[in-house]
Length: 232
Length: 229
Image (cartoon, rainbow over all chains, first blue to last red; front, side):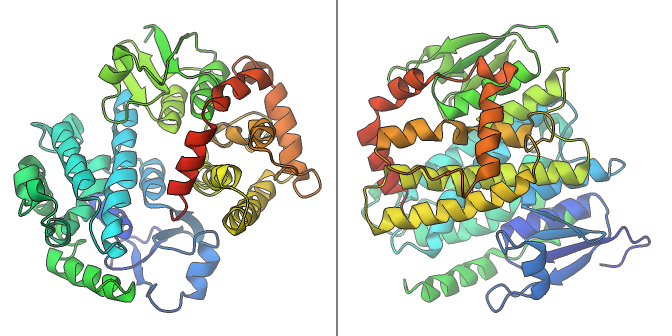
């Protein structure tokens, strides 16, 4: 991504990773130029990736003048701190910051925790779990335009929006089983309509639409992963 | 903001301890409210409806949940010595290693402790030691992970401090954090548990035993359910 001024940022990433997408969206929201490097993590991991993230060996990795920062939410907070003249993702008030961190943690633990099982589990045991999670997020969003509330599009919005591309996969993989009668045929739009509107609003932002891939592509990717895991 | 501070917690729980340690290190006066986890109070359920867990910090009418979120809130909302370093890279590193300590050390250690003897347990012990070696290296001969003073990472990893009591309870013969393999961590443990501010909120051996004794069966079941994760 070409910028007028090079601020020494390189992002090691993988196209469909929601964690990588968080970083892309954050960098775009802040108008920060960076070099995007696609790491094919499905194949052999590059030396650079292994050297810069020896502990977890995964993306995203942010290189800032050669120094490494890893873990998407840590990267987001780092960008806020190091580029204070750019649009902040976290609000200034300590309580609002705590609130944002709590919900971003919820996304990691619950949305990713339950959602990623669609790669590895033949039956979505977590159907009911995922419906609860979606309803909880719906309640938290309430009538707000964004999760950031008065702050606007912020930390929690960035943390959650990449996972909405998985909504289609939740619909197709989750709600097929007749044993879950109550939920059979229920779409995310019926369980959490405000969340769906919120996702559409986020998609109107260039930072988001430029960083995410279509739900179809994510669905295809999930299908491929499930084949790899021997589930389909 | 001079509003009263209350901490709902369960004395003996390492998660509750993190919140207390942060409050004490910042010199914040607070009222500790012991929660009966088998019969949770209306106050807890009302202010932490999502997880319904302790610790829960109440600062005036603000409620903050999740131990490490509480630690950061205490750091930012109150005056006193900083818990997180001010340097951006050091700060990112502290957060990274805290996450590592929680996910790869304490969690794996939990599985190692409460999984019955056998191949699975041996695997968890090996994994725990491998990961603890990285924490050992992070100390780099310093008194605390935070340097001369206790910091965010020390607080996050503080559950390691009462490991020996748990190992006794679980019937382990040789501690996972032995002096020979982990001299820096053993020294750190001594420094942490004897620190003036922290001592006051560290449960005694008897209190830890009391907290965990009735739970053994449940812990074994929980460890079993965690095996694949």
